[in-house]
Every structure is written in structure tokens, then in C-alpha cells.
Length: 581
View 1 (cartoon, rainbow, N blue to C red):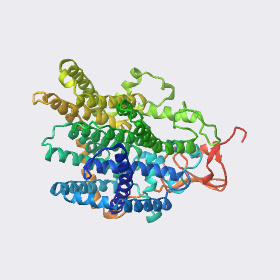
View 2: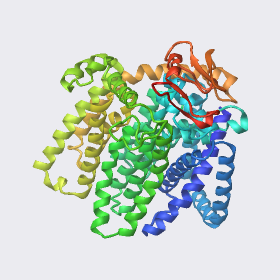
View 3: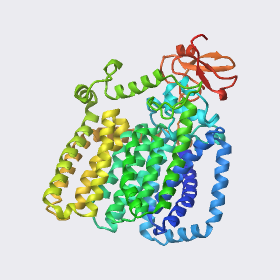
View 4: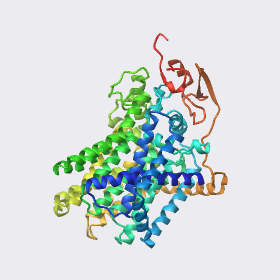
């Protein structure tokens, strides 16, 4: 646990320094004023730092492994920025100290959350995909960076989430001899801390709990209850979901505070580009860009538009570049965008097959011949096979979607005084974006693990917005009824899990073997074969897990006959064999 907490302190300091340097320049450029000691500003700066460090780790991986040198360069940059802004940091710390009791309570809540989350990140159960390819992806980046054609030896390496670069940057294997996997836990702490502070601010300053930001702040707590037992796994899902939940809550706080200046919304749209590099399932969030873009064009703020576009491209470029190197495709596993012809390119049939498998498995259908089924054909199977736990969440989101949309239409027709307000429009706009994201998830790969961000936040956003736009007590009875409906169904799923989580927490406290160091990856016995001078490992159970230590590994030993090394060393990469080889 101590190693995890120290790792998080390191992540916090570096992301804050890097992020504050960049964010302050954006503020000055946009001529936007923001309280120096505001909570929103602190989290905005940290998010900017995490996005920039993720991009940095990917850029660095293009030339080398992401280890000691990458960290030393990052530390040197932080020290330079710290010296450059030393007066501002002193004044900011002074303002935070002058916040008095409220500031201390917020710090205490964040520290408490850190210890509780670290308890599960230090010792828990790894999810299956971590052993399948997550751990291998991180080790590739730690030791070699971006290597041509590694998707040939294991097609899942082609997914190439930017999250793995950030995980490699902060794994600290070069320092302690063990690859830490706690970045996803820091993402959980980030979102949970923001939610705790938001709820505290609403109670202490606004004197209310029944408002949109409070309702949306419940998202990270609900999600933590769902994933806490496997929060030790460095999976792309967790960090993406937590950051999407933070994004919604931050956006809603801007609406509640009637902040109509374009800059904070434009900044959150840059964050969306970062989220897309973590997980392509977040791609449709880009629709949120429309309103800020239209406003900027109307006001002819061309320089700002260019800066925001360049910022987004800076975050996106290394992700696309790594895709090209790792798999030979711009976006894996989408073969419709076919731009390159290189020797290490993964076969189109393999790409299409992987894409079909993801979609079919999410529908609980395991026959590729059924890929063209309509929603009316596959939906009954999906509904039946998802299990009681996931079905309760599905019932919540479908129920609230129907009733919430019906309510909004009624408000538009019968209560134009509410529907004409800018606040109502902003909520309607954000809800439309997330409803579109929800249906994109449902129609593409409707596995709940991929879509909890939209399943949970669509429901909370619809209910929370109703609390905000319905000003009178009698009107609030309707969102209260929706909240009760959602709460009962979610509780049916969450209460048994919370009980298991508490039992696991108690066992973790008893097991003092992980109080210092984080639980390491398993190291199962593997088979191996020589490929020239390179030893390739593969699991005894075909298609099984290879984890971290047996490296490099493929998932099927019999598939080694179909590809070859491009040179004498691992760093030269891999490609498919020609038919006559």
C-alpha cells in the first residue's frame, strides 16, 4: 500500500506542475479569469498534466523505452517549471492555507479516499484481460517503446491504448524492480475526490443536496463499488470511465454556476480528445465540441480555435502514430480506414475477425456467421444472457431514458418559460451527447464493462438536470420519484457487491504482506520456442494468459508458424510470413 501511495504522490506532483504550467498559459491566452485557489482550477490543471504526460509517454516511446530516462527528463522539466512559477506557487499555497476549516476538511476527505482506494489497488483480483495482454502491453512500452508489428504476435496488442504509455511512465520498474500498476487507481482517486469536494461544497455553500452536480457526483462511488475488487488491474476501462464521470460533473458545475464563457467548455473538449486516446468507445463524446465551436466561430475568435485544435492534435498524434507502428493500421480494429502498405501490417482478415469477436462477445453471441443480425434478433439474447447484475443497470438506463425524454418533451411543450432558459438548453445539449454515446455503445459493442460511463452517467445526468431546472418543491417530486426508481434497482445489484467488497477490505487489512509493496503480477509456467535468437513464450492453455514476466508472449503457440521476426532483435519487430516462406 505504501508503494502505491508514494506512486500516487509522484503522479500528483508531476501532473500538477506540468498541467498548471500549460493550463495557465491557456487561461492567459483566452483572457479567462479563475480563482487561483478554486477546486475546479486545481483539477483542471491536474487533468491537463495527465493528458500531457500521457502524450509525452507516447512520443517518448517512438524513440525509446519509457523508463528511467523518460522519468529523469520529466523530473527535470518539472523542476524548471517549478522554478519559473515559484512566486505563483507560493501565493497559491498561501491562499489554500487561508481557506481555513473548509480547506482542511476537503484535504482530509481526499486523504481518506486515497487510503481506502489504495487498499484495493494494493491487493485484489486481476481481471482476465490483464493477464491476456494489458501487462504485456505495458512491458513492451517500458523496455522497447513502439515496436513495428507486435500486433502480429498478439492481435490484442494492436488496441494500443494511450493508458498503457502512462502506466509504463509511472510503473517505476527501473527504480524498485517491480512494475507498479496503480495509475488506474489514481484515476479513481481523482474522480472520487472531485465528487467528495463537489458534494461538500453543495452542502456547505449552496445548502442543498438535491442538485445536478451532487447527483452526477454519485457516479464514481457507484462505479467504485462495481470494480473495487479488480481495481488492481491496469485496464483501460477504469481510467476512461472515471475521467468521463469527472468530465460530466465538471461540465454540470459550470452550468449550475451559470458560467457561459466559452473557455472552460473548450478546455473540456480538449480533454475529450485525450479520453478518446484512452478508449475508442469514448469517440462519440466528440459531439460535445459542437456548441463551443459554434460560439467561437460566431465570435470570430480564430486564434483560440487554432490553439484548441493544435492542442487536440498534439494529444491525438502520438496515439495514431503508435497505431501505425504497432499494427500498420491508423485505427485498430477498423479496417475501413486503410492508408498504409508496410511489411508489418496485420492482415485485414485478422483485423476484421477481431472486430467481429468484440462485437459478438459483447452481445453474448459466439458465432461469426451471426454478425449481421439486426438489433431485433440479437437484443433478446443480450438481455437474457447479461445476468441479473447488469440487467438491473440496463433497466435503470432504459427506464430513465424513456421517462426523462418524455419529461423534457413535456417541458418544451407546456413549460416554455423553463425550456427557453440557457441552463435548460445546456442540460439538453449535454444529455443529447451522452444519449448518443449510450446508443453508440449499445449498437457497437454492448458489453457493460465498456459502457458503464454512459449507462450510469446518462441516468444520473437526466435526473440531476431535472432537479436543477425544476425550481419549485412540487415540481421536484418527479425527479425524486425517478431517483427512487433508479436507486432501488441499483441497490439490488450493488448491495451484494458492497458486502463482498467490505469482506475483501477486511481480508486485505489482515494480510500485511501488501502493506509495503503492491501485489505483483502472477508468473505462471509457460511454453516457449526459439524464433532465431528470440525466445517467444506462449501459454500452455491455447489463447490463455501470459501476464508480465514471460516476454515477449503470443496467445497461440501454433500461430508462430504464420509470422516471423523482421530482424535479429526484438526491437526490429515482427511481420507475417509470405505464402512461399
